[in-house]
Each structure stands twice: as structure tokens, then as C-alpha cells.
Image 1 (cartoon, rainbow, N blue to C red):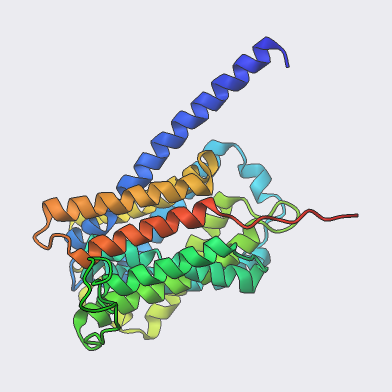
Image 2 (cartoon, rainbow, N blue to C red; image 1 turned 90 degrees about the vertical axis):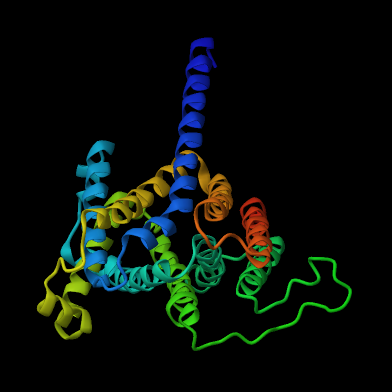
Length: 339
């Protein structure tokens, strides 16, 4: 390689690394503050479907902007048909719509650290669904990391005691039955666990479409297709749903304020940032950005809110961070085919 080519390559690598670090920091901050912003600026009595519809519209516009900036709009739209859109996007979009509504309810009823840790159980559901949908296997250490992630969620919700981690010799970790009927469980934990499972399934279906033979779907175009399909499904569901009756009675913007747009905007931008981190940093370093975001959410919760951080949250958060690191750094080894 000529000296000039080596210099250009080195310059490009440095620029990409700088972009990767910048986007990783943005993702960590968005990940840390999103639960706090949603809980602070989204009223409890607001119609959740109106939030999701506006969020999908904003995501669509941002994806269209990124597709135009990338210069691949003509190539991405070549051969596009309504039939292909329905075939590729409608099932994942229906799942995403349900996931968004469940996650929004959890945002409103869980503290930031608990939400972020329980939300990471989507890694477990993603691994299971990728295996069922695409045949993707996990390495042994990744399986261990997923079990560790499950343990962190059980500790966070005090289903497993933490005496062993605190060095107590009087007892060993044991299962504790929670108050299943409490609002914390029915309006917080149950919705986020449902959203996490749906995230894994819809993510596996989306990954199959994006990585299909022949190059798959352009990611920005696919995001636009998902947003359009999700919006259409939500609009149709309003015809016979309680949310539709609420909108007909009180109006679409009932309960909205100017600040309601803040978590909608940050959530939409977060989706774009995830794509940029994946492009410039890769999935492994994206995992590190989420770990940093998890710790930042704990620090912010301890300093800003009255709830503070409990021992269970601290141990659960640390185990979840270790689990993400193990899963990201120990991919399965592909065996070479012998002719």
C-alpha cells in the first residue's frame, strides 16, 4: 500500500473512531435519561395511542431524512411495492406497536434503573427468538450471561434475596413471592417484561428481513415501513378500542403540553443513534454504551430523585452490566466448512 493510501486509511479510521465514541456517548445519555424524561413529562391520564402515533410519525420523518442524506434513496426504492411492504413490515410493525404501548406504561410506573435493567431481558428473548426464527445459536458463555441477566432481574424485583452477595452466613438466596396485584407489578413490571419479549421476537423478524439474501432491506427504508405500518395498525385499532373512545370524547390532544414532545423526540432520536452506533462502533461496543447508560441512570436516580438506589438495584444493575459485557464479547465461534 502506498504511503498516501496508508495515511488516508489511518485518517478515515481515526475519524470513524471519533464518530463511534461520540455516538456511543449520545446513546448512553439517551438510554440513561429516557425513563426519567418519559416519567416526568408524560401525564398518567394521557391517551397512550396518541403518544405512539406521534412518535412513529417523528421516527418516519427522521428515517426519511437519514435516507435522503445517505444518498441511497433511489437504490433503496428500486423494486419497492405495496405488496412487499405488507409482506415484510406488517407483522413486526404490529408487534412493535404493542411493544411501544406496553413500554410506555412501564416508563410511567417504574424508576429509571429498574426499567433499564428489566428492559435488558430483551437480550434473552432476542437470543431465543433468533434461534427459533433464524437458527442463530449462542456460545456457552453467552448462555451463562443470559442466565446471569435473568438472575439480575429476579434480584431487582426482590424475588431472590441478596444475603449471599452481602456475605451473610445466616441464610442463602431464596425465592420470595411478590405482591402480584400491586400497581408496581401490574402497571410496571408486567408491561416491561411483555415489551421485552415482544422486542426479541420483532427484532428477530426484522433482522431476518434486513439480512435476507440479496442484500436485504435498506435499514432506513425498513424503519419507515415499520413506522407507516405501525401507524396504520394503531389507527385501525382505535375504531373499537377504549383509546379510540377516549379520543372521540376528549380530543386527540387532551392532556398534552409542549413538554410532552420532549420524551417523544429523545426516543425517536435514540432509534437513529442506535443505527449510527451499530454502523461506526459495532454491536460489541454498543453493549458497552448501554452498560455505561445503565450506570448513569443509577447515578442520576441516586442524585436527582427521592427514591435513591436500593441494595437490590445496585447488585441487580451490576450483574446486568456484567451479563451484557459477557454476551457482547463472547460470540459463538463459527466452524469452517471443509470441502
